[in-house]
Image 1: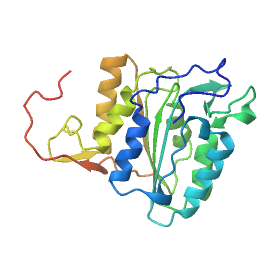
Image 2: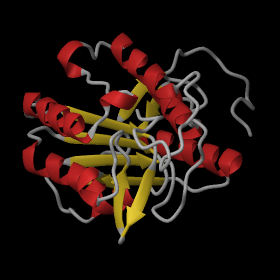
Image 3: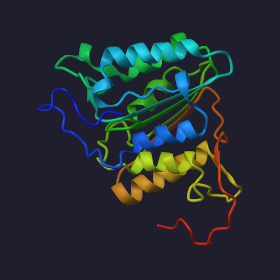
Image 4: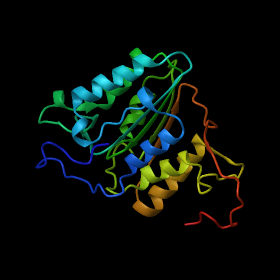
Length: 232
């Protein structure tokens, strides 16, 4: 989660009050993802060397059947058709930027697990969907959910990450068929409606390598909700 940058003159900071990335981290801890299984790099900690080292460390711990979850929020941009994330120490040259291609290459080449869930809240984040789709067929099942299309900028609000948080915490807002389970497909639909109605932009979703759209992300509390609950 990167909301401020070393070169403040190049990268505008985001409002850090009620930051949803930290809320996601706390929720994952509550679900038992703790200790070495969870790495959170916030702002100044999210340098390119730190991102590379910690991603490699986490992937190295994975075994067959494991699921990798990667989340990024901050600035995203395109350069010569390639997608990049703005790590805290992003400089003036592409050697100092974290590329979307590098992220996918690292997972493809070193991850021994079964599935990768990639959640991205930044401008041009849909480029990651395209990057993953280029690798099909692949032994790794990818579920990729982003706040914008490859061609679009993205809002500075937390709308997409809030939609993701809703899905992971089992909000009935996301459970379209009211069956008590929130699936990956329902997250995609919920995020699409939120981004369209509140931000006037398109999100992007990619399910590659046989990723199951019915993958359950959470369970709802099971309490009855009003018939029109969730209408916008």
